[in-house]
Image: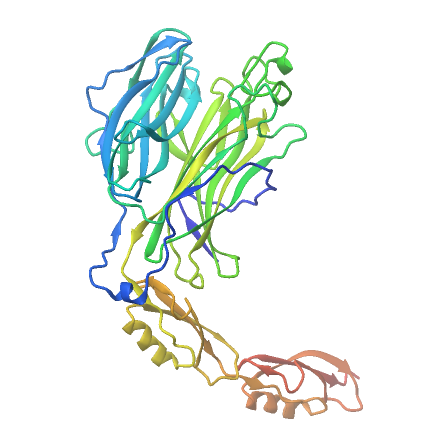
Length: 516
C-alpha cells in the first residue's frame, strides 16, 4: 500500500465516527472510459487544469465596520463563460487586517450568478475574531465550489467575493491585495479556464441546525458523553480514465461551545445550553485534530494508496499546515480549509475509485459544534491514454516488449511459486484492456516454477541433506532428539514430502543424536 505525502504526513489511528448527515451531492455526467476508436483517434490533447486568476485591485477601498451590523460588501467580481453541461471550479482567498481592539466578526463568501442575475451557487466560511487572536490582526481564509451550466446554451457567469465586518465599534478592515505574481498572500478570485470533466462536489450540514442552536438538534463532538470525532466517510469518486493527478479541496467550519461558569454568566448562544462547556470568562478553548483523506481503492475495495492533507491555519498573518486545531473562546467560529493534490496510482489493479473522508476530532476543552462545509474534487492533470495489452502466458521478455510497444512502461516484477514454466507471466497490474495514461507502469507477476519436497523421514542425515539440495531446496536442522540406538536418522520434516514449494525454499528436518 502506498502512502502519499501531501503537505505533511503522520499516520494516526482513526477514532470511531459519529453520525453526520451528508447533504445532496452534485456532480457532472459520468466520466466514462472512451471507446477504442476514441482512444486511438488523433487530436486527443492532454493537459493540466488551468485557472484564470483575478487579483484584488491595488486601489480597493477598506471595508467599514459598524457596531452590530452585517452590511455586505462586494470586494471584487470575476466573469467567465461556460458551454452547456460544463463545470468550473471557483476558489477565492480573503486576506484582511483588523485593527486592535476591534472584536470583529468577518465573513468570507463567494456568490455566483448567471447572466440573468440569478444566483446559481454560493459558499461561505465565516469566523468570529477578537483582536490579537493568535498574536496577530492579519487573517486569511479560502473557500471553493463548483459551478455547472445546466442550460442548453452558453452562459456568462459572474462570481463575487462578498464579505461583511461587524465590530464592537466603528472602524475599518483593510482588505489586502496580492503583490504582482503572488498567490500565497493577498485577496484574489480564480476560476477554471476549461471544463472540469468528472469533477464532483458534496455539501455537509446538520439538518435544520440554526445559527443560534436553541433547539439542541445540531451535531456536536467532545465533552462528557459525546463522541470524540466525526468522520464524514463513504464519499466515492472515480478519477477519469486519462487522469494522472487529482485535486481535492474542502472547507468546514466548527464552533467552540464556551460558557461562563457553566452558563451562569452567559456564553455562546450558537450552541444549545446543554451542549456548552465550562470556560471561565471566555478564556477556555476547544482543541482537536483534523485532516482530509482521499484513499485510492483496489478492485476488491481495500485501500491501495492513502493521500492525506492537513488544514491551513493563519498565525501571525502567515499560513501553515497543522494536524491540530485550536479554537479560542474569543475566536469562537473556526473555518478549516484543506488542499490535497496527489497522483492517480496506476498500480491499484486498474481501479480509479477513491474514497473521501473528512476527519474532525476533539481532544480537549469545550465541546465543538459541527457547522458544515463542502468538498470538491477534480481531475487536475490529464495525459494521452493507452490500452494495457494481454501478456498473461508470455515470457517476461515477450511481455516487456508488448508493454513498451503499447506506450507503457515495465515495473520490477513479483515472483511466486507456480506450476507454470519459470519466467511465465501469471498476472499483470493493471489488467489487460484497462485504459491508462501513456507511460504508466505495468507490474507483472512471474512464475518461479516449483520444487517438490522429497520425503527424507527415516534417511540418514547425509542422504537427506543431499536429496533436499538435489531438489533445489535448502536443508536446515530445526530440532534434535537424544537417541543412541539410531543416531543421525531423520525423525521428521517440514514441509512434508510431496509438497510443492518455491525453488530455494527451506526444508527443516529433525534428527536423532547420541549425547552419552
